[in-house]
Length: 69
Image (cartoon, rainbow, N blue to C red; front, side, top):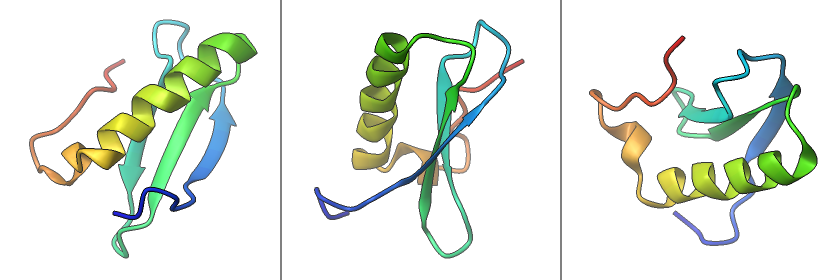
């Protein structure tokens, strides 16, 4: 995956225990969802965290899950 690839990012009202998550669609495009209830600083850290998951291609593993309600 290209280091400078752009990711679709959106904000959602998630449970406060969830900072964010990432996933990909059938075409392989990556999405990052951040928690709109949290601060900009927390969302910045969460974005970096999710990009690391994408860089490691962890979410392509069928057993990968980090988001749990």
